[in-house]
Length: 257
Image (cartoon, rainbow, N blue to C red; front, top):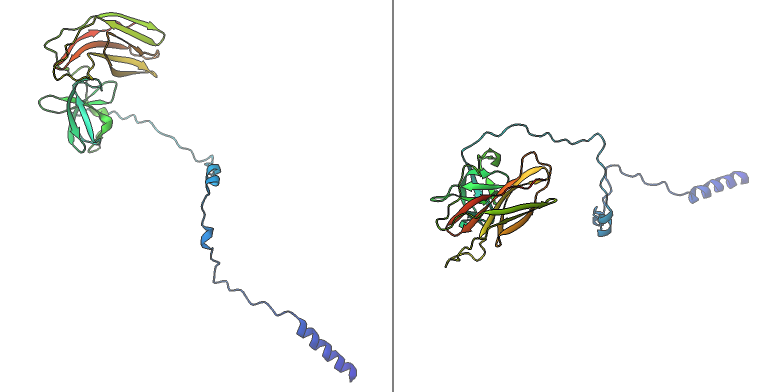
């Protein structure tokens, strides 16, 4: 009897000292991240952050467009700059004719061969603007315009001056220096103080392509770069510029490479 009582007391004490069973965890509620756990990069981390590399199988190729552009008589465009100057010739050093304000619609009639200037319909005198300040409409492409310069368009002729004469054209490496006979242009009452009395048109070689540029000079000589490596020959000419128009041109006898 005493042994049975002792056994029952031992079982009772062991049961009272055991830890309670854990409560079951619900699988229906996901933990929520605190607001401070937002994935952001500190300045230091951003400076050292390296994106994952593109897998070797992800390749990107560009296929050149071989489709020729059909020639069109004109294109519609709109002025995107606050104001652009329309000039007598296709370059920034020709005389100012008129200015177009932003959002002015214009009609383009042609382009200059070798640069990005385009001929604008403007009555009574057509003029030239830099196409980078225009937005083409109706999906137009400047390459579809006819090449109008140097053939197809004549800059206004001066009624008061005759052409100059090129005296020499020499080369030292890639540097070409052209010298011509001086012509004194009389400053008129309304003459532009920034006007160049000489305009030198050059079609020169750069990076394997013939590039057209118009250079202004206030003295009867100029030096510019003409690289080797073009399939077409470089060439150029000199104009006298005054407020009524242009005298010339005087062709440059191009020095050999």
